[in-house]
Amino acid sequence: MSLTEPQWTRIEPLLPDRAPRRGGRWRDHRQVIGAIAFKYRIGTPRVDLI
Image 1 (cartoon, rainbow, N blue to C red):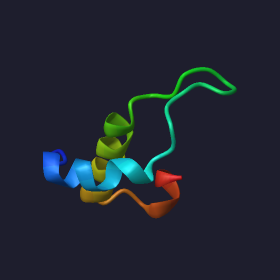
Image 2 (tube, rainbow, N blue to C red):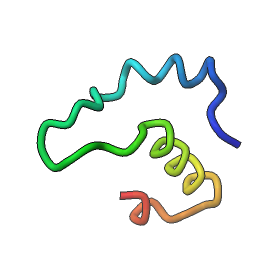
Image 3 (spheres, rainbow, N blue to C red):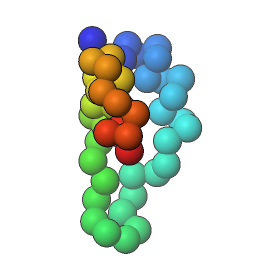
């Protein structure tokens, strides 16, 4: 289950700009948020999310 469009529209402005500054390009924010949500849903211990 991924984020719906209304959910994504609501959180997208809160995320940092994707323009590379140092260290190369960032991964797609939607992909990262989806992975974090997946880990949370399956019950991964909190220390593994960091």
